[in-house]
Length: 270
Image (tube, rainbow, N blue to C red; front, side, top):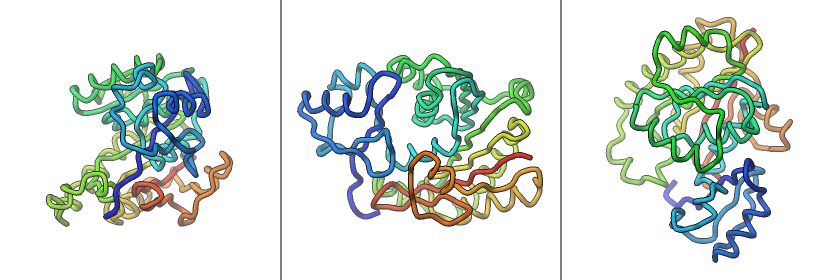
């Protein structure tokens, strides 16, 4: 985490292929190589001003760490599904999910911050995503979606310990008390969005932290009171998509330097 992070992009397969994007970047003076785990990623050989590249403005790629790309694969979303992105933030995973769904189905993205949701709109237009609906989390809408979602992603707010190499100054503001406070928020978000999962559906909880208090302990606390959910093996899910990672049996744990630090748990509803 004390080394500079690689510059990684996710190719937007709604508009192009990895090889086509790589060739176009080369014509724009940017050399790259495929990522080792994600089938949709490229590692750039130098830093870029993305907005100065026509390929970016045409929606051919987004900046996204390889680990973040893998988290979206745990949903195993497919065209026609109903997907919920509970904490959309900047919209990176919303865009990933839309591409995996081939822009077919229903994708509902929530966030508590209306400004963040507004900032996603230009990214959706640039990427050619037409299935995403952006909403602030309201009880009426959540009730309407109860037991209707094929999968729900809770990419929870966290301490960001796994991404310190991208934001070294965050180390100065981090303390143990913050991790304790944010874990309470994480548990509350899981409780809020879990009812949206339909029987047989999937709930993926992810963070970009490496702390057990925000990861395993949050999931174990949730499972202790929700016997209708059980853990699935993330490694097995990824293997079905030709992605092979070393990780604990019940959880996905990705570590620098190969990717940013990510944790994910995949739960299935009976």
